[in-house]
Amino acid sequence: MAKSPASFICSQCGAVHPKWGGRCDTCGGWNTLVETAPLSAGPGTRTLGAARGQRITLSSLAAEEAPPVRAVSGMEEFDRVLGGGLVPASAILLGGDPGIGKSTLLLQVAASFARSGLKCLYISGEEAPAQVRMRAARLGLTDAPLHLGAETSLRDILTTLDAERPALAVIDSIQTLWADMVDAAPGSVSQVRAACHELVSFAKKRGTSVILVGHVTKDGQIAGPRVVEHMVDTVLYFEGERGHQFRILRAVKNRFGPADEIGVFEMTGAGLAEVANPSALFLSERGQAAPGSAVFAGMEGSRPVLTEIQALVAPSTLATPRRTVVGLDSGRVSTILAVLESRCAIPFTGLDVFLNVAGGMKVIEPAADLALAAALLSAREDVALPPDLVIFGEISLSGALRPVGQAENRLKEAQKLGFSQAIAPERTKAEPGDGMRLRKLPDLVTFVGEMFGAG
Image (cartoon, rainbow, N blue to C red):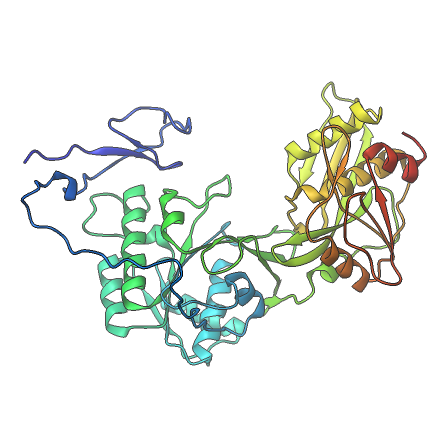
C-alpha cells in the first residue's frame, strides 16, 4: 500500500494543506504552515471483506442519567467558573498572558483539592520541583498533600499517571511536552495536538481530570492548533492588566456548565484572593462625580457586575484624531460615535477620544452601548452624571434603544450597592424595587435631550 503523503497544517487556524505555501489560504497568515507526519490508514482504506469493528451501543434521548458528582475545591470563584465544581474525567485548558498568574492559580487550586481528600499531581515542564516548592512556601501551601513532578516526556507522564491514578493532574504547560512518536520539535502544531489527544484520551479512559496550561499568542489566543480547544471539555482564560491587582477567570467553553461565567481574584503578596463581590471592588476607587464617568450594570455569565466606564474627550491637533480604547470593543466604540453624530447631530470630529473600563475589566456585551454613549457625552459636554445613576441598554444603528436580557438582576445588583436611579430601554420588562427610580427611554435622541438638554 502506498504511503500517505505528508500534510501541512496552519499553526493559527488549523487548516490542512496538501503542500507547503508561504500563505495560508484560509486565514491569510504568512509562514504559518508546518509539516506534519502522515496519519495511519483508517477504516476507509480497507475492503468490505476485511475485519470489521464492534457495533456501538445506541440509546434514546429519553434515557435518564444521573448528573456527574462534582468535586468542590473550596475556592468558590474557581468552582463557579467550572459550573459548580470539577467533573471527573474532564479535560480543562487554561490560557493566559505570561506572568499573569496561571501557575499560581493552579497551584492554589491543586492544593485545595488535595486538602479536600483528592489525590492530585502537579507536573511542571517549565520549572524544577524546587521552584514550585518556593512558590508553595510563599503561598502557605507546604502542608498540602500535593505530589510534584518535573517532566516533559509525554510517555513518562502518561506512565506515571497510569501508575498513580490521581483524581486530578495539572500539566504546566502543554507546549513544553514532547511525544517521541511525533517527528517534530516541542511546541509545534504536531506535538501540541498529539500531546493533547493522548492526555484527553487518558482522562476519559481512566477517570482522571486533567488541567492543561496553554501559552497564548500576541493576539490573546491559545497558541497551537484550534483543534486543541475542540478536544477539551472546558476552555478558561485568565485575564488581567499588569498595572491592576484584579484577575478574571473567564470560561469561553464549558460542556458541564454555563459559558461566559467569570471568577474574580485579587493578586496579593500571599497569592490570589477570591473576590466575593466584584461590583463593590470595581467601584471602590470611584470618588466624587466627575464628567466622563458612567456606571454600567453588566452581566458576566449568571453574575451581575457593575463597572465604571471612563471617557476623556479633548481637542486634537492631529489630522486624524486619536481613538484609544481599553477594555471595550474598538469597533463598537466607532459605531456609537457614528450614531451620535448621524442621529443626534453631536460631532466628534477634531476631538481625541480616550475610553477605559476601570479596574482592568473587559466589557464585550452590547448592553454597554448606552453607558458608553453617556460617558462620551458627559466628557464632551463637561457635565457630570448623577453619582447614584446606573445605565444599560443596546443602541441600534437607527438610534433606537433595545432591551437587554436579565434586566431584573442588573437592577437588583445596582440597588444592593446603593444606586437609586437607573436608565434602560423603553421595552424593558423588569421593574425596580422600592427605593429605586427607573426611567425607560425609547431612543438615543430622547436620552440626550433628558440628560444633557440637547437632541
